[in-house]
Image (tube, rainbow, N blue to C red):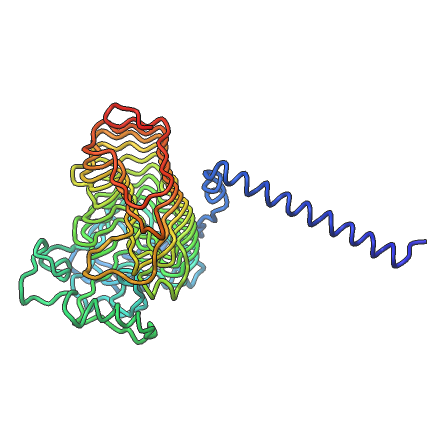
Length: 475
């Protein structure tokens, strides 16, 4: 006869075995991850949900669009998108021709598709971009709508081989940057005026609610080009993007996004090619970046605002991309306060006398943040101006950038990297005495020409494995 005592004993034994097996399995999974971190990348790719749209089409010409490059088609775009969404989704077609418009706001289950010779020209009138909840240099704000914007949407895409033209140059949006390099002269208003950029930063430091951080007209903070805010399951494929007012591709608080085959050619101020921010499971592949700032810059919020949001950017994958001009090929920071981890870069080509660095991490004691687990392999670098790998905890571009938030940078790995001209340094790494840059590995790295092997300050555990610099093996 089975008594209650026997049942209890069997239950204890069963639970004990379950706990032991669980611990054993956990250790095994951890061990696999540590021995081959690229499996994390493979799992991310395998498990990423894909966009899927109904086989229905909505041609913007049927909603009143005119392809003369002069008629404002904002209403036609919005009507087509709304009708598509109301009917369960599908493809909104932009036919061949030139279409002028203001802000385009996407909806659930909508694929905005540009035919091969379609070009969307975006208005240069700030009044065509309504005030929305967005972000500017890592600080959330109510500001001009991005040129293409989606907030809180699922299953949304921009596809096709057409062109998105922001029309920005030194006579309009770019002059707001306040730089003489882009047409600004003394007396012209800009983002640098005392009531603009620094006021926003101060509001965030004082925890002023985002709804009360209202900017827009008279404040000269340029809009992002394409922004997916709090979205899930997103595709941007094959388009060409030129002449952006500001950051170009900006997924913020967005998960599960593929950016595939996109060409970015925009040399204005702050013209980063792609800026994933507070975002996870982002794949950037088969793209070409030719930019006025960082080609790819992985972000996680600025200062107090980043710590308030506290969402790290994670599982960011860059594959088979080409980087031409820019401040850096793949960059992490400087808006980095919530941290970044699990970044994978493989099979990329970086080459231009106007490309400053290949891989770069930039932060400071005002930004803080933990940046860890960055893996780079199979990189072909022609020419970079400054260095191959730069890790900097003292980044300073806006005046005083010191505070009490000492950053962490650790576990940075480069493998199978070939460089023709590495500029000044193969590795430039600077940390704090109390927080050194930790665990840098260069394995199977060949740098044919560079002025100096490295510049190191407060670095702990740097390893050169089968590394040749200036034709000499580095031990």
